[in-house]
Length: 380
Figure 1 (cartoon, helix red, strand yellow):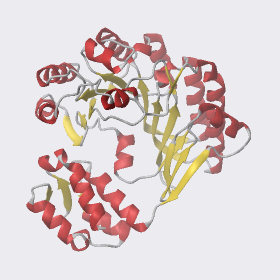
Figure 2 (tube, rainbow, N blue to C red; figure 1 turned 90 degrees about the vertical axis):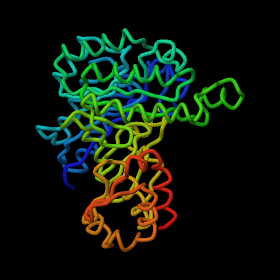
Figure 3 (tube, rainbow, N blue to C red; figure 1 turned 45 degrees about the horizontal axis):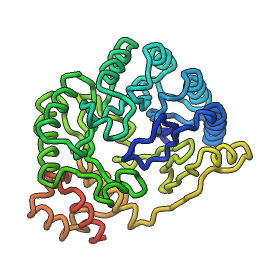
Figure 4 (tube, rainbow, N blue to C red; figure 1 turned 180 degrees about the vertical axis):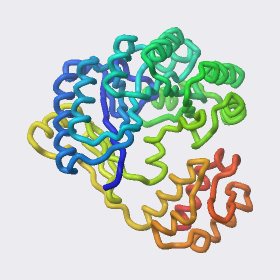
């Protein structure tokens, strides 16, 4: 196996946000130590099975990884270093909540090898943060960024959201400008999605949650596309913007159809054309690892049709788009011939563009990307 990525899931949070459907659990602090021990054991086992393979990206996500005590996070980093050949220039990212970090913690983690932070900011409006169920305020965000810079981090990303209850386009424009003014290396911007089983979804179904209408949400999307490039943040994926050379290399593996190994509860993997996911419950995961059993509960070997569809819509998420030669090398098909009807139709609708070697979404195509992806799935 060539260099690949590692994803580690830390499923703890201080308080579950009202919109979140991720595998994360509040009030489980008593499991911190046992979970870390299980995760380190799995790291050692997988590293041994794969003969200490080369790794060039690591992403520690959650949940809120920064909620773990620093000594436990350091144990995880030590286990990774012992079990995998982490490349000298590897990108090692960790998600953090601005309300859970200290300068000392970040200084220790920087020394342990973490070199990229992703802060779940979501908003610079304290009223909106409270409506989302976030545990931090804007002052915490500014303090966390100051701690990170003083600890020596230069590769920092922040997440923002739009389409939030009570949010207006003019307010979102100010938030975008405030985010860009902080001069972080990377910015991810996501529209709110109502996920089944979340408090937000239940409140909306009961008529208790008012959201911006489609026109207002589209205005916020347009602001994102207009404001950020002018502030030096180049769009490289539908929801992601970066300063030159600061694109998230780990996430690019997902979009470029490259292998990654997931470790921890609820972690997903993609290796040798097979997708797997682990048991999401923390205690079940710990029991499985202790018993020497696999925590994997789902395995799916992609069919050729599934693989082609995934390859197309993952590649098209990026502004680089799909390289026809790479597609032919992967599937022994000529993209322009095999998808001639769909491609020509989408091109006529100004949703796709090409230079004969690559195919990419136009600005209009980015906005209506789901329609493009659905067209290719239906065609194949």
